[in-house]
Every structure is written in structure tokens, then in C-alpha cells.
Amino acid sequence: MKHLVDLDDFSLEEVESILNKAIYIKSNMSKFSNAMSKKIIATLFYEPSTRTQMSFQTAMIKLGGQVIGFDNPTNSSIAKGEDLKDTIKIISEYADIIAIRHNLEGAARAAACFSSCPVINAGDGGHLHPTQTLTDLLTIKETKSSFSNLTFGFCGDLKHGRTVHSLVKMLLRYKNNKFIFISTDQLKIPDYIKKIIIASKNQFEESCSLENSIDKLDILYMTRIQKERFKFEKTAFSAQKNFFKLKKNTLKKAKSDMLILHPLPRVDEIDFEVDSDPRAAYFRQAANGVFARMALITHVLSAPNVENFPTVTINKCCCNDRCVTNFEKYLPKRFIKNKESYFCHYCSQKLNI
Ligand code: CP
Image (cartoon, rainbow, N blue to C red):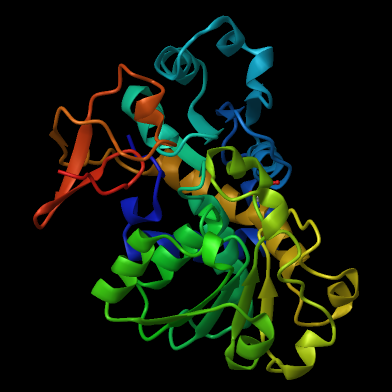
């Protein structure tokens, strides 16, 4: 199956072809109104969502297809104890494509292992959110001439921000980008992302001040503090609130063409007065989610089958306590070998051996 769990599953040419198609769809909607007629998408949302869930549903409806699914697992047989494997095996016989959001890291990869139709990761815990990345790229592409030679500032909860992790990984596939990670000490970008940046010979720096960094940025990517992830944390959520707030005053030091992105929802990290600034692109970014997902659905449902990842089975538990393998115990303990290290096939965590 052609799944999208991580954008690394797609070649650069495929990603760019999806973005070009999204731009074409945006101004030629009527040409696609029957493109997916008789096709069904199942949107399985184990975690709350407004944009991702409804933009997938809107995308399929605008393509002439139909939608099934749930937005709360307690309204499904999951409440009776049905596991992820059986849920996916059944629903993949009903639908042509599945979009799944889950609170556990690696859950989308696990779902793909048992699905008879393509699976799209609509966000797995604090791990990845590849369709948000397509939406982000589409918004950048409409404004900047390329995805290279840019300085990106990521601000907020960089530890749990799956949209940040996915976007940074994707931007490393382009040339000469620089990253400034603005966060508190407790919510820094994970080490595995820093290691990928170092290995790719790109530059990054860490900062604790938005005011001191903003003048260098071509793109500012704001994020909220992810309250729902703190049950696994030693740090209290209340201690992390209100550190960073983008205000009109802060923007005085920014470049006149700096793009302000946010995956949304916004809580209080961008002042309402910023919304009318021409650099604020976050509502257009959310609207672009429909076009990016329309292009993705047509791509996945017309793509040929691809080979599975080469993985090895090792009888060790993943050391990430948020990993799906630590909850869905039947999952095979699969790892991907990279040089002398092994990484969890589901959540990307390095294995300690
Ligand atoms: N950006 C995003 O994932 O928003 P939702 O949680 O509303 O889907």
C-alpha cells in the first residue's frame, strides 16, 4: 500500500508534485468534483481535531467521494476494548483510504501494518503530522520563491510539537536552510531532530527569546504549549504557559516580508491584533489544508503499490513511554537499522542496547 506516515515515505518529486497539484486544484476546483466518486475515506480521530479532520472530510466530499469514521473513540467499539489492529482490519475493508489521528506515537505506522487500504497519519502523539507539513509547504510556496536559503524560527512547545518535527525533517531535504528554535529549557526540540540536522550539515541555534531572534527570520512558526501531553511530564503545564506571545510591538523588529505561520489552534501565543498584519498567514494556511489534502488523496489513491520498509525484529521494548508498542502489546518489535543504531519503526525513538 502507498501509506503516508512520515513524508520520508515520499520522494521529493512526489511531494513537489502533490504541492503543484494542490495549487492547480485551488484554481480549478470544478475539474476535480468527480475525481474520487464512489471512494470512501474513514477519518478515525482518537484525539480532538477541527482543521485536520474537517479538511480531510471536506477534501473527500469536494472530490466527489464520501466520508465515514468517528471523532471520539468512546462512540466506537474501542470503548468495549477492541484494539487498534482489529479496528483497522475491519475499517480498511469498508473504506478506500484511512486518515488516523492518535494520542500514541507510532500509532499510524502500526495501523498501516494491518490495513488493506492506504493509511494517512493525521498526527500521532508528539511524533509527526505530515499532512500539516504539506499544508505549511503549500502556504510557503505561495509566498516565497523556494524552500531553500531561508531562516526559520520555531517558537513554543518544540518538544511535543509534531507539526514542527515533520516540517523541520522535510526542510532538511532542501539546501541551506537555517533553524532557530525558540523555547524554554523544558520544551526544547528533541535530540533526535537535532542529530538529523547535524548529520545533514545544516545550521541551527537555540534561543529563549523571541524578541532577540525575530529580526533574523524569513518565516516564524508559532506553536501553542500542548497541555494534553503533560500527563507524561515531570514539568507542570502551568509553569510553561505565557512565556512567548507574539504582539504587534514584537513585529516592529521583524522583516517586512516575514511570513507568520501557526498550525492552530491558537491559545494565547499570538495576540489578536497580529491577525490583521499582512505577514500573518495562519488562516490562509488552515484554508490551504483542504487543497493539500485533496491533492494527497488523489495521489495516494492513484499511486502504485510500493515496497515495505526493510525492518528487523529485536526482542526489546521501545524506550519511549508514549510509543504505541508499549500499549498495543501484540505489535511486532520492529526496528530500522541506520549505521550501528536501531530506531523504532513506529515512533522513531533510538533503541538503547
Ligand atoms: N493543525 C491541526 O492539526 O489542527 P487540528 O488539531 O484542529 O486538526
